[in-house]
Amino acid sequence: MSLRERLRGALGFPVTPFRRDLSLDLDALARNVDEMARYPFCALVAAGGTGELYSLTPAEVEDVVLVTVEAAAGRMPVVAGTGFNGPLGAEIAQRAARAGAECILVLPPYYTNAPFEGAMAYYQQIGAATDVPLMVYSRDWAVFTPVMVERLAERVPTLAFWKDGQGDARKYQRMMQSVGDRLAWLGGLGDDCVPAYFAIGVQAYTSSISNIAPRLSLELAEAGMARDFARLDGLMEKYVHPLYALRERAKGYEVAVMKAAMEILGKPAGPVRPPLCECTEKDLADLRQLMQVYADGIAAPPRASAGAR
Image (cartoon, rainbow, N blue to C red; front, side, top):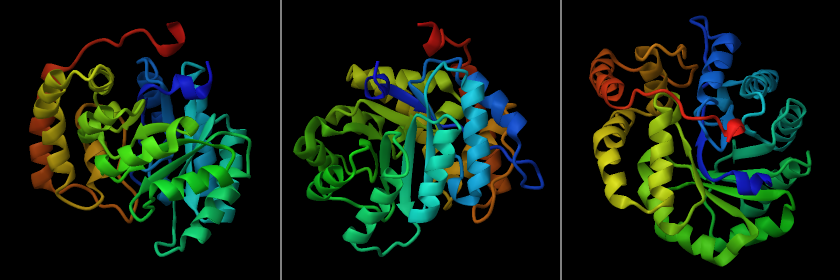
């Protein structure tokens, strides 16, 4: 199958583990990826937003992608993050492709007030750096209209996937209807947006919960694709909404909470790098209680891996 056909369901989104001195812990990354890849995710995303891309050097990104590809061992494709600016983004894309990534996820450029023509040049430069399919992540200040997406798709031949990080289902649906099947459409803001995303017709979503509860990520995707909203409501109420309420307590908690949750569940993650901050003791106490709910409710052996299906 083509990569576009394969990316249906849930994409795992492994964190980048660090040691206490904030150096990369590639051994921990390999163990985490191997465990995640035992579940039938449609792909894994290395060094993305949850993977703290913006705290990594280009060489570290290449190492993270290489270890992820090796640990995934062909069970599913690996998507690699890039960003910063045109030259750095292109260099990282080339490094990631060399390390075995099958798709490049482009985060917004560092400059928050870039004019649209300048932003287009940024995506063009990164898209032209490799033959690997491109996935644009429309998050934070990278806000697009349907016309802007159409123009970008015309100018960047490798652009194949659109990952929404705005959470405006009404606008995203208009975008999907306007641009059509020129692009494959993904949900990327969070597991808490799964009902809205699949209601408007995305084919997959990226899950940070995959780090702590792979089965839950896959159940959310399965229910979403089936538009089984009664099933989704139960999963959201018990597991997803309480977790995201904790993640919203402070900026940067979308990563710090997930790493802390992994450590609570015995999965190596380590600290976050600046400019992110660790969770407070009060928030950690609340997170421990929630992780007990996770441990009691969704602990089960993995299903067959994607490569075995």
